[in-house]
Amino acid sequence: MRRFLNTATLCSLMLSGVAASTAAMAAPAATAASPQVQTIRTLQHLETISYKAGTAFYLYSVLNRDPQEYKKMQAQISAGDGVVQKLGNNAISPKWNDFKHSLTAAKFTTEGVADNTSINAIDGALSSLTQTIRTSETEQKLAGKVSTDKMADMLYEQYVLMEVMTAAYLRKSADYFGGSIVASQGPEVEIDLLADKFSQQLLQLNRYYAKTPQVAQSLKEITTKWTFIKNSFKNFNKDNVPFIVGRYNEQITEKLLAAHESLM
Image (cartoon, rainbow, N blue to C red; front, side, top):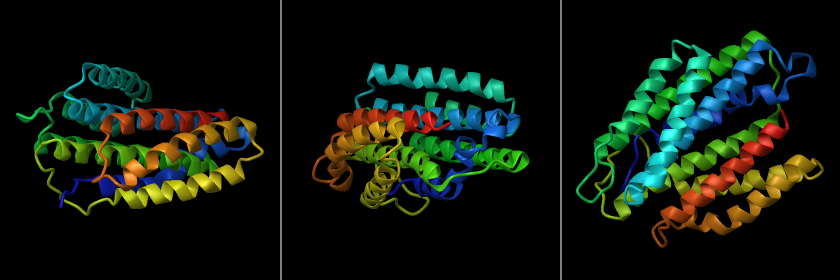
């Protein structure tokens, strides 16, 4: 059985910490421009950059070291460097540097995919970084007494959920196409169950935001794309299509972020 280091940790962070990530969007008008809200938004930006960089790396690995995916990864790293410098957070800076190093120092097997040690290093660094980001978001939320909204939280949770599913799928693809088995140091994430959760929450969001035009249209487009790709997540062993999953992940997550930002 293939298992994956720290993916379960990422899911746990997603489920327990997402409220802090989305605190800014539900803040009262009087505090909308407070320093804490601005910092939360910047931290959230770094979190999304981190997931995007990780996904670009996994695609780079499973798509025969596609130079376009490497460029995407480097672009996210450059963007992250700017955000980290802006934050000036002594807890986050070393975690970001560790993650960046794990991406750029990865080694590859003779089959052309990232090796076990490198993937574990990336997973561990990403988990540690996102956990530190979430802790900082919670601190800012408490300091600024920033309110939250359950459905707005769920909208952002969908973004993280899609990224976690895609990362696990692409790591499995490395094994599927001849890479080394990725050893686990934790419980395996069941991608099909995460896909079911994504579907259930998407239904709730469509109902809740049906009369919110700037969100409803994005959710409609997301639903169409998800309908096409969800069976690839649910039936990995029957149909392995990393390029299609990577492409649709990018389209869906961009739409989710756009919907999220429209509420801020």
